Length: 457
Image (cartoon, rainbow, N blue to C red; front, side, top):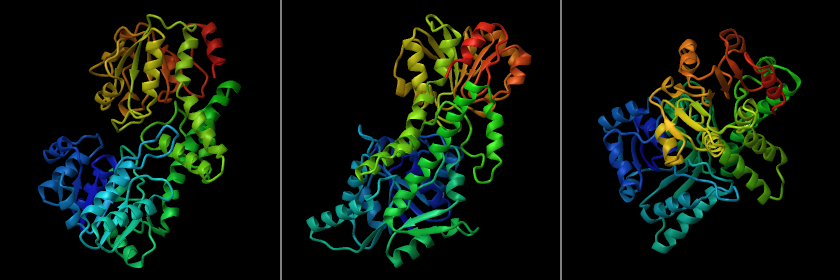
């Protein structure tokens, strides 16, 4: 089948590439000519494991192409996917200007029956707005063509998006036309042969499903972080608590890892957008607001521990930071705790020496030139002459370092772990001062510091 994908960001690029992988003829479109040119030469603008190889293979075999010619792409396609950004506005609502601009272009160039598929994460009612925009454009052209608008939300996790697309838990299709439903199921036939369910519903319910899913996952993260804070107060170990509740099949282990909050392009903006949707509908979503508030507070948990350890005076201190991306296996730093932490440390008079295996360039782009911030070539170089190490992202190879080498590079054996990647027993045995999330601090050198850290929330 012939597919056009409008937008070559994270969702659009993964969607188009995976459809081409199973034999569909896919054209990805973007207004950014430099990005399109780079993609044609195999230069991928994001880091996603395996994506560059898959793009190269399908371009080579002629199943995947990239262009700025929106008219040609729409005219030859049966399916036109909208996969553009929906960034939050100041009030938390999703900005639909890119989605509606894409809809206007579809109306400008539609030349026959089309299935317009909204893959962007959008608020309830957007499918109708897309339909109205296309119809209005067709009226301006004094033309009539049959088309349908489908809500088909993505459920991709950064770092394993290809596997999520190729082996989905479920496929959600929001539409009301029988012909469209049949064609959408045929489009996804290669991905559902192993029995993965296809769920069909109206577009409103489909749009709501995406927001509800992300809000639920965000809620689990904020819940375990709230529990971690209580554990620190009462002397419990959050890792034991996590195992105790995760073994309950009604709860499960996923998304109950304590840390310093969630970030990225999805959870923060989607929770905000759902809050805005609820308020527009006349309901105050108290639980969702709490999820958001707990997460914002949790992003500063590591900073509070650092301040307590150094009696509130960080002037002249230098900190190594391992990890800049909001999670491992991505270069995405949007809403990442690292950015907030770096900003706060520098404002407090400290310096930061950071390392991330994939997100250095993105972090520099977001932070800009900034005095007091340097970027190391590797994880050990980041430790050189630093007063302490801050662990912000749980990249796998951070989990088994050479501790003896770390002690020779750091000024003092001090670690603040925002992702609980080390065993407290191990670091205690090795002689480190170590503070993590929801667990009692390990203080090898100062009982006074232990008392202060115990009081930190």
